[in-house]
Image (tube, rainbow, N blue to C red):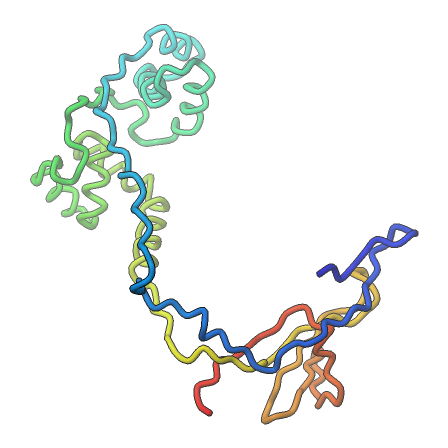
Length: 248
């Protein structure tokens, strides 16, 4: 429902419209899902997720590398840029160089990974993992660094130092996904607990206030002013809050 409109003078004005029949209580028990019922048919599963294609060796375009080198960039870094941009041209490769030229391993000798090289943690050399972990890094960080640097211990340590923000963000995301709270279940009946309405004639003036039901009475919260509301404008609210009824 629209609450504002543009007047003849091109200023936003407020509709004085009341919503009739806002229920004091809601019963959504009929909408509760109870799993597959005898008279229901389960929808078929979607197609199986596509499998990753076999990796193909990427041959570095030496012509692109030489163009980048002629601009003054390090040859090893240029090889990495052309490899990671899959020979798409000078511009994508140069953008990659500008983004990664500050990496500690930018000028380190580059050896393209083999297509059949394992990409999981199982492919990491345990001796290299132990060395990186002895520097104070976690096993997950060591595995990730070695994977990104082709099991080169020195480059792996530099990689961790230069990607701490990325690793911290990865840990935060994993922790958040594993700590999801389970929503409490209960009756499907709810009672109107609060609502928010707007005071003013347009979007250019006025402000929002909140009404909350306390001990059977509506109380208005208007900035720092709190008082009992004799005639709460329930039909003029913008947002309604219902609270589950846990007892009769």
